[in-house]
Image 1 (cartoon, rainbow, N blue to C red):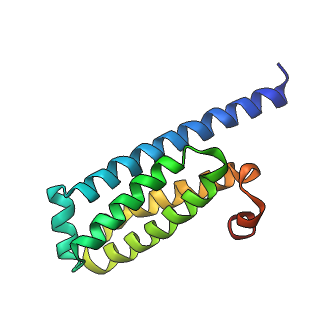
Image 2 (cartoon, helix red, strand yellow; image 1 turned 90 degrees about the vertical axis):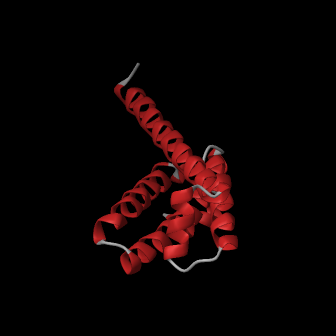
Length: 131
Protein backbone atom coordinates (compact mmCIF):
# COMPACT_ATOMS: atom_id res chain seq x y z
CA UNK A 1 0.00 0.00 0.00
CA UNK A 2 1.47 3.33 -1.02
CA UNK A 3 1.74 6.29 1.31
CA UNK A 4 -0.84 8.19 -0.76
CA UNK A 5 -3.30 5.29 -0.51
CA UNK A 6 -2.75 5.00 3.26
CA UNK A 7 -3.38 8.74 3.66
CA UNK A 8 -6.60 8.44 1.66
CA UNK A 9 -7.73 5.46 3.74
CA UNK A 10 -6.97 7.29 6.99
CA UNK A 11 -8.89 10.35 5.74
CA UNK A 12 -11.91 8.15 4.91
CA UNK A 13 -11.81 6.51 8.35
CA UNK A 14 -11.62 9.89 10.10
CA UNK A 15 -14.38 11.30 7.87
CA UNK A 16 -16.74 8.39 8.50
CA UNK A 17 -16.07 8.45 12.24
CA UNK A 18 -16.86 12.17 12.33
CA UNK A 19 -19.97 11.61 10.20
CA UNK A 20 -21.30 8.82 12.42
CA UNK A 21 -20.54 10.82 15.58
CA UNK A 22 -22.40 13.90 14.29
CA UNK A 23 -25.29 11.77 12.99
CA UNK A 24 -25.64 10.12 16.40
CA UNK A 25 -25.55 13.48 18.20
CA UNK A 26 -28.23 15.01 15.97
CA UNK A 27 -30.51 11.97 15.91
CA UNK A 28 -30.32 11.74 19.71
CA UNK A 29 -30.76 15.49 20.20
CA UNK A 30 -33.56 15.63 17.65
CA UNK A 31 -35.37 12.79 19.37
CA UNK A 32 -35.06 14.43 22.78
CA UNK A 33 -36.21 17.78 21.39
CA UNK A 34 -39.18 16.45 19.38
CA UNK A 35 -40.36 13.94 21.98
CA UNK A 36 -40.58 16.52 24.73
CA UNK A 37 -37.77 15.58 27.08
CA UNK A 38 -38.19 17.63 30.24
CA UNK A 39 -34.96 19.60 29.87
CA UNK A 40 -35.73 20.50 26.26
CA UNK A 41 -39.25 21.64 27.04
CA UNK A 42 -37.96 23.80 29.91
CA UNK A 43 -35.23 25.31 27.74
CA UNK A 44 -37.60 26.23 24.91
CA UNK A 45 -40.04 27.75 27.41
CA UNK A 46 -37.19 29.77 28.94
CA UNK A 47 -36.25 30.98 25.45
CA UNK A 48 -39.87 32.00 24.85
CA UNK A 49 -40.28 29.60 21.92
CA UNK A 50 -43.54 27.70 21.28
CA UNK A 51 -43.97 23.92 21.39
CA UNK A 52 -44.57 23.64 17.66
CA UNK A 53 -41.16 25.23 17.04
CA UNK A 54 -39.45 22.76 19.42
CA UNK A 55 -41.12 19.80 17.76
CA UNK A 56 -40.36 21.03 14.23
CA UNK A 57 -36.75 21.75 15.14
CA UNK A 58 -36.39 18.31 16.74
CA UNK A 59 -37.80 16.52 13.70
CA UNK A 60 -35.52 18.55 11.44
CA UNK A 61 -32.48 17.67 13.56
CA UNK A 62 -33.41 14.00 13.55
CA UNK A 63 -33.91 13.87 9.78
CA UNK A 64 -30.77 15.88 9.03
CA UNK A 65 -28.79 13.62 11.36
CA UNK A 66 -29.89 10.59 9.33
CA UNK A 67 -29.23 12.38 6.03
CA UNK A 68 -25.63 13.02 7.13
CA UNK A 69 -25.09 9.30 6.50
CA UNK A 70 -26.07 9.62 2.81
CA UNK A 71 -22.79 10.57 1.17
CA UNK A 72 -24.10 12.71 -1.74
CA UNK A 73 -26.44 14.63 0.61
CA UNK A 74 -23.99 15.22 3.45
CA UNK A 75 -23.30 18.80 2.32
CA UNK A 76 -26.97 19.74 2.33
CA UNK A 77 -27.56 18.18 5.76
CA UNK A 78 -24.41 19.74 7.24
CA UNK A 79 -25.31 23.14 5.80
CA UNK A 80 -28.79 23.01 7.33
CA UNK A 81 -27.44 21.86 10.67
CA UNK A 82 -24.80 24.62 10.55
CA UNK A 83 -27.55 27.24 10.28
CA UNK A 84 -29.35 25.51 13.13
CA UNK A 85 -26.18 25.71 15.26
CA UNK A 86 -25.79 29.42 14.48
CA UNK A 87 -29.35 29.92 15.72
CA UNK A 88 -28.61 27.84 18.82
CA UNK A 89 -25.47 29.88 19.46
CA UNK A 90 -27.35 33.15 19.19
CA UNK A 91 -30.15 31.86 21.44
CA UNK A 92 -27.71 30.72 24.11
CA UNK A 93 -25.77 33.98 23.94
CA UNK A 94 -28.98 35.93 24.55
CA UNK A 95 -30.55 33.73 27.24
CA UNK A 96 -27.79 31.77 28.98
CA UNK A 97 -24.33 32.16 30.49
CA UNK A 98 -21.54 32.18 27.90
CA UNK A 99 -20.44 28.61 28.70
CA UNK A 100 -23.75 27.23 27.38
CA UNK A 101 -22.74 28.40 23.89
CA UNK A 102 -19.69 26.13 23.76
CA UNK A 103 -21.61 23.08 22.53
CA UNK A 104 -23.07 24.98 19.58
CA UNK A 105 -19.63 26.34 18.67
CA UNK A 106 -18.04 22.87 18.79
CA UNK A 107 -20.82 21.27 16.73
CA UNK A 108 -20.75 24.11 14.19
CA UNK A 109 -16.99 23.70 13.82
CA UNK A 110 -17.27 19.93 13.37
CA UNK A 111 -19.97 20.42 10.72
CA UNK A 112 -17.72 22.83 8.81
CA UNK A 113 -14.86 20.31 9.00
CA UNK A 114 -17.19 17.59 7.71
CA UNK A 115 -18.29 19.77 4.79
CA UNK A 116 -14.64 20.41 3.94
CA UNK A 117 -13.73 16.71 4.15
CA UNK A 118 -16.72 15.70 2.01
CA UNK A 119 -16.36 18.49 -0.56
CA UNK A 120 -15.50 16.07 -3.44
CA UNK A 121 -18.91 14.36 -3.16
CA UNK A 122 -20.96 17.50 -2.64
CA UNK A 123 -23.07 18.31 -5.74
CA UNK A 124 -21.73 21.25 -7.79
CA UNK A 125 -24.76 23.48 -7.12
CA UNK A 126 -23.98 23.29 -3.38
CA UNK A 127 -20.20 23.58 -3.70
CA UNK A 128 -20.35 27.29 -4.49
CA UNK A 129 -22.03 27.85 -1.10
CA UNK A 130 -19.90 25.45 0.95
CA UNK A 131 -16.38 25.33 -0.44
